[in-house]
Amino acid sequence: MSEITQEQLAAFKKSVDEQPKAAVLRGAVTTNGILKSARDNQRAGELTPTFSIDLESSPVANQLQSGRCWMFAALNTMRHDMKAVHGLPGDFELSQSYTFFWDKFEKANYFYNNIVATADKATTDREVSFLLATPQQDGGQWDMIVAIIEKYGVVPQSAFPESQASSHSAEFNRLFNSKLRKDAIALRKLVNGGASEADVDAKIEALNKENYHMLSLTFGEPPLSFDFSFRDKDGEFHREQNMTPQDFFKKYIGWDLSEYISIINAPTEDKPYNQTYGVKMLGSVVGGRDVKHLNLDLATFKELAIKQLSAGENVWFGVDMGPKLDRTAGLMDTKLYDEDSLFDIDFSLTKAERLDYGDSLMTHAMVLTGVDLVDGQPTKWKVENSWGDKNGHKGYFTMSDEWFDEFTYQVVIKKEYLPEELRNVYENATPKELAPWDPMGALA
Image 1 (cartoon, rainbow, N blue to C red):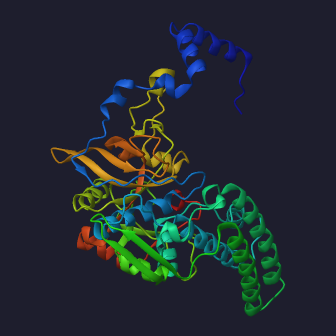
Image 2 (image 1 turned 60 degrees about the vertical axis):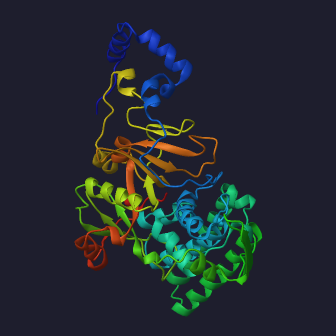
């Protein structure tokens, strides 16, 4: 092995001391931190929040201290459509807590089924270790929220408001995951002790009963039916009585969710383009919609997002939200921070290298609500975030097209905007199953 010697250390120190600007740069970074020292303020000023295609904006929602961005993004795309069709008031929101309740409930059952399926493996097996590391979490995928909505519907926020646990989820997650690990011990003992399938199913039912009790006390009891009233933009009053969540979805949203599919851009050798991919052990609703991605080249990926925006429809999309981000200013741009010049080191990686070497994956989902086209080409994008209205431009962020290229991994596109050959691939090809820890299985 290669040891670091005292002679090498002396040479390293000498090389820094001999750099004329080292003392000034050290003072800047130790005082202000890396990002503030490397920030290109001129570049930041160029990213103005004006867009040639700019869909009507709603007040930005706030997921607070929870990992529900994927859920907020999905419900936000729907509420934009609801407001346009039904004239709902500007501050209207669908209940993110309602879908959160059912997501937690279903994820626990999904976990139990995975535990039973892997009961013959040691706890040190990579798949079992993966399951036990995080039995459930706040994050999710587009297909997972679709599975929840198809089974449970949606409700307005007034019918199932936020709770302490829905907006500050860490406390609940710690306790719930501890319970699920304990439940895994019991289920593995049953299976490995030769219990019948009926006995295992009965145990899962008993555990799910406990989970429902825990969720009901923590989040509140989700409504089976509710009343809903509002005054539309023209001043006309509307009242609905005794609506079920499923009826509410059908009447006020009415989307055929099977028409909205996940498109990814993963330029790695193990994922050829124009093929579909699933992820082993990833999902929420047993018997519900499976997670399935269609991997496309960047040009087509981007073209589809622009096509949907041009038709007046917002786009759910997933990104790696960490790199090259100014959260306060609401800017996402690859040129915003020049760390290379600051340290005189080339930090660049290709998108494929970042995925292959664990440097990047999808961590956040938001909504594309606009794009600025110059001579038909995108230069920047308007992004509806779910971090409240104190960041960016009243909660909306500006994303450069270069940042889109490097850190956007997923868009949800209506099938009608895809060429027929790609629709056929999505609908008919057998998805390749990816490992549970594949970056395309990351949860936003």
